Every structure is written in C-alpha cells, then in structure tokens.
Image (tube, rainbow, N blue to C red):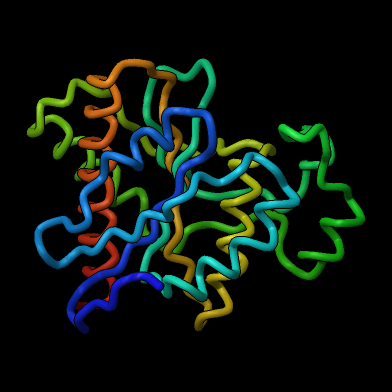
Length: 214
C-alpha cells in the first residue's frame, strides 16, 4: 500500500507508459514537492493496451485515493509538452494498441454508454497554462509547454477518459490531467522533463486549491 499522508498534504498520483520517455521521467520524480505535495508514482509503467488500462484505472484510484491524477505519455513527432484539456469517449475502434487490439464500439457502449462524448478536467487548465509557462522560464528548463485539447483517440485519450469517468463518481469532481511529452533520448532530456513535470504539478495543485478555497 502507498504511504499514508497527513490531512494537509495533497496526494498526486502519477503514471507513465511503457517503452517511452514518460516512464523515464516518472522514475526521476521526487517523492515530495515543497513538503505538502506527495507524489504517488505508480511503480510500474502502464502497458499501452486498452485491455490492461480499463480494469487497472479503478484499482489504482482505490489504492492511492489521490486528490489529483496526472497521466504522462508520449506525443510522437511533437516537439513540445502539452497539457490536454479533455478526452473523447469513442474512436478507439480505429487505432490498434501494442497488442494489435482495438476497443470496439460495442465495448465503448458497454463501458461508458451513458456518459457524454467528451469529458474534461475540472481543474482550470486555462489558469494553469500561464503559471506553468512562468515556472518553466524561472527554472530555465528551455522547454516549450502548452495547454491544448488534442489528446487523440489512442491509449493516451483512453486512459484519460477512463480516469475522468472513474473520478467523476467522487462527487462529480474530475481533477485529472493528461500530459504529453515530446520524444527524447538522453538523460539530460529526461532530467529536464522531470523538472517540467514538477512545475506542472506545482501549478495544478495551486490552481486546484484556489478553486477549493484552501
């Protein structure tokens, strides 16, 4: 079981995906940020597979009981970091995963039939964007960071929608985000990526707490 936290700590669950930079970044993240933010990095990379993701999401949320969830994944061919606003319910029947399987229309209807076609994070990402950019500049990470709304209809969008749907069962709040990272190979790039992610999480928590009146 994850370590317990005191009542004033904010618990942020973080995941990365197998065989891509997101997981290398996750392995470099600290356990705490500024003493109050506890990072609960799942110790295993998520397999890029619909059949694996769907059942594991509720298990992870039950295990970690996070205040905020940050999923990190790779955006192939994209040279910048992007915090995605929302995820689509359908479209995954068009894009096979690493096991060459799709998530069919029938499976989508069975899992999420009554849900809207799109679910969005309830964290104000428009407010997060400028603060995140400023933090990255202060940290001199030299990274291009943006808030966008193009998570796609592959496993990135799938894990995002699945988590948004599951978290919404907790009083309707969806403090979940998906962060796309660019392709990278060197340890220096991974270290930069970890710094960018830490700045992102700090800002997410700040905006989330402002809205909650903390």
